[in-house]
Image (cartoon, rainbow, N blue to C red; front, side, top):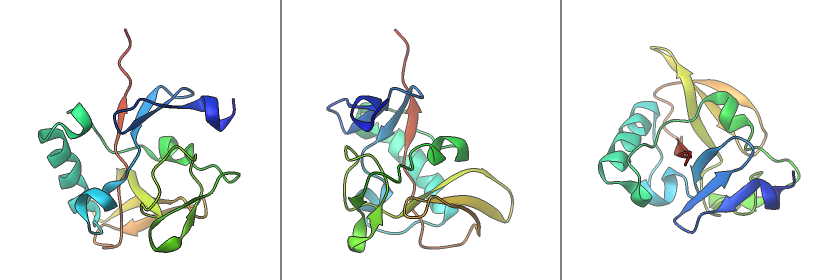
Length: 141
């Protein structure tokens, strides 16, 4: 499946990943929060977006590391913030962060996935230059 048919723009600020059945926010936390987020701030961001029915939904969550890794598409390039090249499908919004916090986590550290390199790193939770991309399950009819 190519990137054009894999992702479907739902017209509400979200993209449906037809491979996984997940719905991703086109924008990550950067344009919404206007700031970097450490891990605890990212958890709060998800909670706040759910309380506000962000994009009309209240069931947003953190991505699992296996889910976020599947977004990496080395053959695709869009421009992230500060003119960084990130490798996401072209339907995702430009100007976002270079990666995303993801699950699992422990008391000290959490996983952070880079859209620039496709690598997964374990960062201390107080790493202050992070972002998060919201995801939810697509409801079955």
